[in-house]
Amino acid sequence: MIIVMCGPGGVGKGTVVARLVAADPRLWLSRSWTTRVQRPGEADDAYTYVTREQFERRIADGGFLEHAEFLGNLYGTPWPDADDTRDVVLEIDVQGAAQVLERSPDALFILLEPPSAEVQAERLRGRGDPPEQAERRIAVAQGELAEGRRLGAICIVNDDLDRTVAECERLIADARRAPLG
Image (cartoon, rainbow, N blue to C red; front, side, top):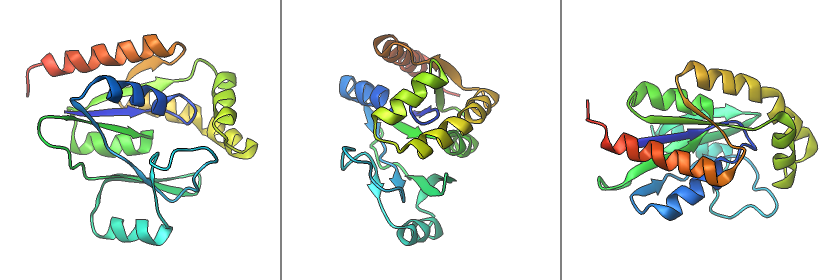
């Protein structure tokens, strides 16, 4: 099963996904590639950081399940290499989610939403986004959320981390029990 976790920057995707993966050995997190500069304090393994040239070469080689440009940087998900006993978790943006859903329409598609633009801005600043970058992310967030809803995502407002993680765990368990096809 493919689990698509998406939402605008600052919504808490990384935090939620880290908790899910830590609690469930049947989940495998696909590490995205980006041309974005690593933020101060950001874990070295948050992304595979590459040059634009390396990224574009990987696109030409057909090496991504999905890829998109966002605010001048490239982001992409390499084709998953998890074994068949694990479910793949993709922590991606809405553009990427649309591409994944074209190829895997049965993917579990969860859209995390911020409780408010103010909370989103606070989270973005807290993780080290420069003010102008945070403003740009907030400016595009409403469009991202609207597109995620249009694509049929299951929407969860991430206003309480424990509740959000529990809701995601329930959705994953339900999807695992669902008949195939």
